[in-house]
Figure 1: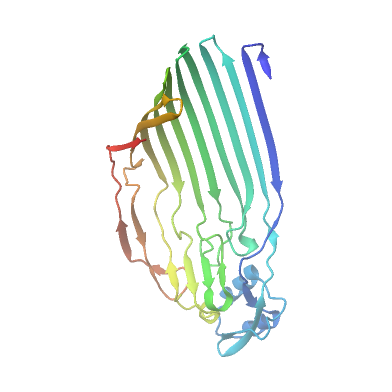
Figure 2 (figure 1 turned 30 degrees about the vertical axis):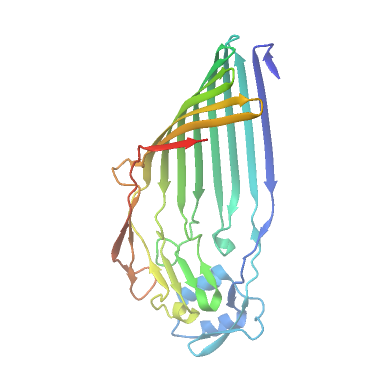
Length: 356
């Protein structure tokens, strides 16, 4: 509606979309039955710490799956499918506001604001004890000024700002004796990854600033458009792969004996959050030529110049190092061997793209 007759106008919209549902696993996870846990608890050679963690965070299978058993220290431990049904709701909030103001017959001012927010349960982990809330927000604000030079020539200049936030948390649960709860895999026997989502914790924030200008020029049979678009994408990322540790065993027996993981054993430590800026610049020109009433030719030229990200500490954003540790005799005792996989991305100032 109008704020001021023939001068200022507004528009607004808001919607709320709650979705409630349950989450279940895509493939079955197995666990010992109550009798199976009783048998395991009586075995003196097993790690009671590892056993108690399994029982607490995986749970107990209510029934043995047919005649399925898992061998541990020569005994066949009855096991079955663990029923996993957990909340997986999401609440989405979306809002839009716009304001148009006629400065004069030749100048109009336009403002836009968009806000989207989602609060959801992160079901990336395989067991509900490690589910967390995952907040995601996005904002967009822009202001533009449109100037009409005459009936055939118009210019629009626009400044915009966009912000995006996404965070995947790791619950404050620790493995006994460690400072975090690692990812523990028991692959052959239980088809299980126990622990928080494998890539948690991590967070991403991106701020994009944009300045654009577009000119429209109508010349009888020619509709000419040309303009400029400049952007600065400033990103902050906090993510170190396997920072909690990732230890994967082929069998339950190996895990309960607290032996070295035989599938994967890795924990990366150190590192700093990444904060970098990636400027980009674009130019374009286009002509829509009405040759005859039955023939129109559209042709143009575009130039793109995207630069690699420049990081606050002078580190290269596209040069990486990972540590591949050889783990000792138990969870959380890595010995590191570093390897480096390097790749570089440079600038290319000749990215001209014709179109016809």
